[in-house]
Image (cartoon, rainbow, N blue to C red; front, side, top):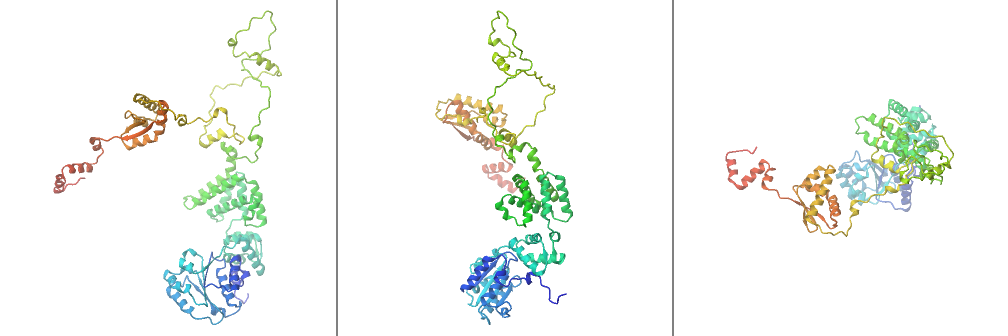
Length: 610
């Protein structure tokens, strides 16, 4: 056992120079330029996710502006680190303010690194404002935080802000490979990819997992050991599952999911992992987007091979199903059933696309242009086959002195015309075809299509192309388009009542009885070009408003007057009708209004309205 204490990789391999900082080249270059030009700001704010190098960069910056080496012990007299998570009171900030006045004993600058600065209280921020804005010339503040949105805008305006981004998977893998070579660990590249992806952009997390895996597997770090220890589903599981879905193997997919659950994996993790797998397949369909896949070259080759066998509709449909399952997972009462339903839907996608009546809505994989637009038929002689009972007989032998031919209208339908006989004679003789047997039972009717399926059958050919529109399928004009704006015939009250009654009968024939009752309340009144109709209540008025267009189209068409307008009026209800809808309280108020002494009597007798 070594005499030196064990150090974790995050501390042992902490960068001590700018070129050792991983994945933050833009920030490190800017800080080096500012040091070289002597433009040292009074305050800096380093913000970003955890484990991306904020505190490390602050230490390197503090050492660089003072010109200290790594082993220089004077560093501890010039750099002060404060954890704002545990020192967030006003007294802690005031102690810093008092220390700032003292110039450094060695070097040029005193650097104060305040980590997790967003944890400071409101009073502590207020006590820090003036010093942060006008510190002494020898003081530099470096604030680090993971939640910039919690910092006061007055603090942000006094700092130069540097946003640290997440460490990319290739950068993390390269750094892990360097550490593995330094530690003598034989690590597979695919295993390091799993560690980098699991770390989610935090290099410190990746190094912690690396130390854990080395302690578990020793000096040989394999892909299988990493996935087992980190509790991550390997690529092969999702490749197998996707192949089963493409083959519509629902039982196999269900058994595979059951095996995943038996190994202790979370069903939600299973959903998100498969969604990421289908996303990678989508990306691998185009060579231009292949670089978006974060995997080794061998895994990319597997993705490309499976992407060539999965069409676009399968991938988009599968991603949509998994996205819905992901959203609904937390609120589901039966989470396993939700995932199994998503499995069955994705596995049924290929089968439904081939067997359903709506298959024509999806473009076929290989579309033949000749199948989409049928070629015009070649000019061939058309043979008309007469009905079975009227077999074509050879012409009879010539008879001397033939009788005159009967009239054309007296020839039975079963006898072919001479032109037809001549046309049939040009065709080689064939055996007479017996008529097919007719079943006595009526044929079963096919189920009627409705909605989108009915619309598809009208326009989509069985081959997937678009049907040619028949000449008699012209769109009928709307009734309103048939009105001539120049119609201006005189309209009489009798003609208006007749047209009104005709529309009421039309409604009655359509079983629109509620509208029939509303339009039968009385006769319309003609006031110039206005047709005035009185209704009893707002409900009837709303019904007539919804029927206004139909009524006007009918009246203008029947009366040949395009200037007619419909005006609705509300009838005044009589007092007796109003009383029928009044409550006891309303009736009592009306009585008190006529005789105020009634209310005094009620109060004197201490009566209640109930």
